[in-house]
Image (cartoon, rainbow, N blue to C red; front, side, top):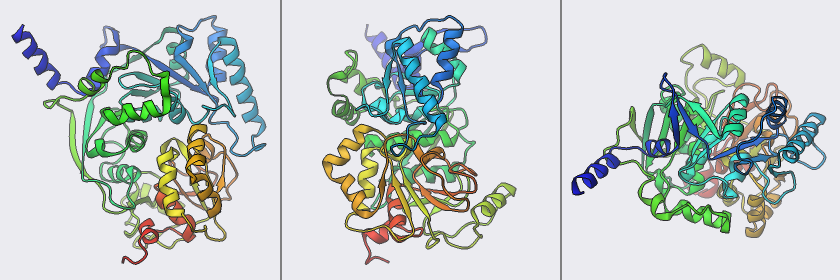
Length: 469
């Protein structure tokens, strides 16, 4: 017995967190080594739901377990009352019809739990540590901040998941980023992951299961979600941070008594972790940045510290990025006029994100000529913001408050004029992402709030500590 226990302990110490969750969910393998993975939870948004369920109906199939699926109105949800276009209204109605026909839980516009998929689903207790989660949205790995294994999938794959509760997958290689140091004033999880992007680019971790370790565990749960959300921009297939007592407290706070019976604290704190001898295909160390980060180009990897100079173009891609953004090498982003500021998205629209921005805004007004919009990630986030007084801070500063949903992240919400410069807390900034010819700089909520006040790209630390050089 002692020998067996020692062997089990040795195996556990050489196993990664990804290994643990993967092994618990593998149903079988085919002759080519592909695994059939059991999927605990599936979320379908309003843009994909009409097509997914129309195909399931056309094929005469039934859902394997309707109680494990959730429909959410987020992409087509109107940012402002009456602002939805005809296409969005049609998608919303088709999603409601699918929910009725298949007897599925729906977070509809106006519902207490409605919001962006990767914000609202975790808040509702629908996603738990050690579980598997899929969504027809590339940022499904966001739930890795809870220690859940999230995967984006295609519409056809989602049909398979809903009708079999499984998904075929190739087991990805694994990587670990061990963060060192802690964020100082003005620096957030968004700044950390942007600094990771500029160092490692978008190909180093392509298709891999990525674990954030080291001082990642010192971040709050919502900051961990930001890391895992932006891991998708690193090319990762999925991302994780080991769950701990903070995660259990966060779930208890948000989900109340709706936790699954099998969520055992001892299991979460003991087995859902990587062993001390665990091996990764890529294992690197990365320090926390010492200054806020902001993108200068059309990729999240084209990032600099807000007080650095714009780099020389290294290739044709960067030449094009500089031209699109109307920037010149050797210049600075600081002081460049800003037209719009957007705080929202599945990356940075949780309560802690809004609270960090409010700390910068408190008692100050946004600059004349700046259109500033904040969209909470869920109705739950909005309720917290109201109760804490944070919503009032945004309104008094001159921000416009929108209804929860994806909004301007993918060019929804409202039309932005071509050539406008936007500071946004979203996850992508490729050409035309927020509208034709719109130039988007990705940054943290704190930096975005500071830019709104200054009317130009600004280091948030200058507003928080104006006497410092």
